[in-house]
Length: 239
Image (cartoon, rainbow, N blue to C red; front, side):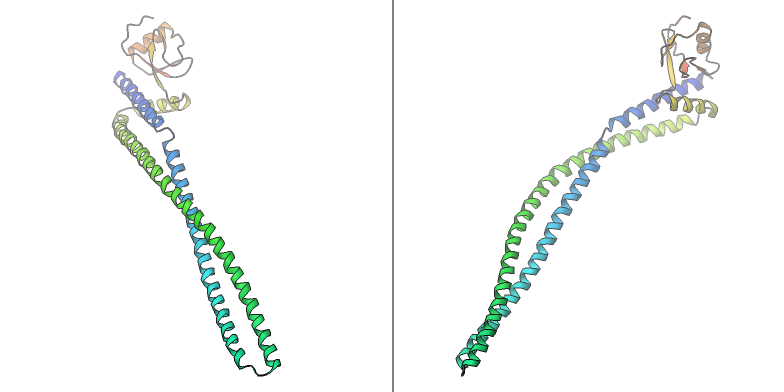
C-alpha cells in the first residue's frame, strides 16, 4: 500500500503540473478567436464595400449608355431640322427634341449622383483596405505568436499526460476512485502531506493515533476535517 500511496502522490503532482500548464494558457485561445473574428469581420466589410462599388460601376456604365443613346437621338433630330419644310413639322420636331433633352438631363443627373457616390465609396474602400492590411499584419503576427505558445504548452501537456496514463494503470482502481472523488470536491487537490503534525490541505491538527496510521501507510487515511488523503513523506514529525 505504501508504494500505491506514493504513486498516488506522484499522480497528484502530475495533475498539479497539468493544471498549472492549463492556467498558463491564460486567455490565449479567447484572444486568438477574438483576433480571427475581427479579421474576418473587417475582411467582410471590405468585401461589402467592394461589392457596392462594383454595383455602382455597373450602374454608371448603364447610365453612360443611356446618355450616349439620348445624345445620339438628339444629334439625329438636330440633323433633321435642316430638312423641315413646314412650321408644323418644325414644332413636332422641337417637341420631340425637348422630350429627348429632358430624358438626357434626367440620365445625366442620375449619372452625376452615381459618380459622386463612386467617389465617396472609393475613398471609403481605399481607407478600409489600408486599415485591413495594417490590422492583418499585426493580427497575423500576434495569432502566430499565440499559437506557437499554445502549441508549446499543449506539447508539454501531451508528454505529461502520457506519463500520467502510464502511472495511472499501476494504481488500484478503488484508490483512484477515492482520489478522483476527493479531487473533484477539493478544487483539484486530493493528496496532501503532513505539515508539522497537521493536514497539508486544511492545516487541521491530526490526532496522534491517526498520524501513526498515516506513517504506517497500510491504508489510505483521509483528513477528518477536509476529507483529503494524507500522506507521510518522511518528515521528522511527532504525534
